[in-house]
Image 1 (tube, rainbow, N blue to C red):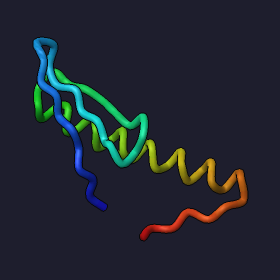
Image 2: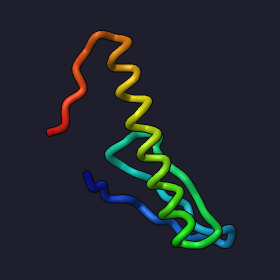
Image 3: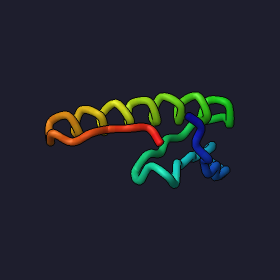
Image 4: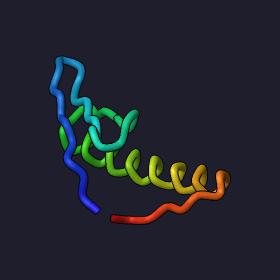
Length: 63
């Protein structure tokens, strides 16, 4: 699955956010590091979302 991300460059490096996944964000000293970190953040976000769904007896489906 692919997500559009927002990349924000500052004096401190790069911040990245995933608008489709509220609260899913990361950062890095370089653009490449930030992109690598946001991939991990997305993977972790989705794993937690799936775990929470299982605990609440709901269904997690890809659409």
